[in-house]
Image 1 (cartoon, one colour):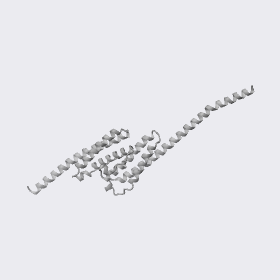
Image 2: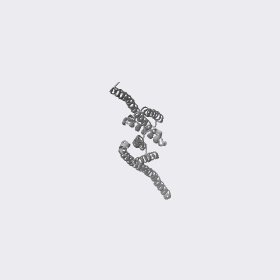
Image 3: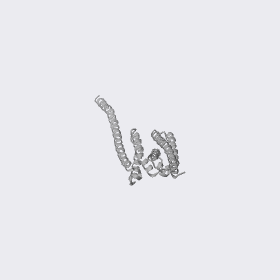
Length: 231
């Protein structure tokens, strides 16, 4: 066999294997993203059992992706793979924080630092959504807790000052996270003021009702006492 034939056979075998791995990884990545989205929807409904089930499915696929692409770093670090990891991280952290659990660590999720941070950066949007759902029912300490977590996330993100080539565009997501935190803080301030105003108006209304109801009776009693004295 001449050397050209050897090269041809080698490269075809290599690219066939890579192409098969890529096709499989694309399917797995889409499944991870779907399960992650379903997890987040379930946790917003506080359907903890469903969220846990979908999160488990996503976690299993993430592990499978890592194993399948161990020999293909160019596929492991491809955009679609890292995007899937990012969405998985977002689902894991969103679920944990809404349920008031500890923040999952990168080592516990078995993802790269950049994927972890980009997923963390997008959690703020989900926490804002949860805050707004709470505020529709009235201001509460739970909304304050979630806002505090959003502040902590942003405080961490702004310390990561590295080139976008390493962080996969984290700086832009950090800027967006800041805007989300500020808008949420503004919404909560308005909600608290409205709640206090509503409470004050109710108290005033009750006070006026009491004075109105007691007033005529007091006057009538005084008139009756005066008539009795005259008699």
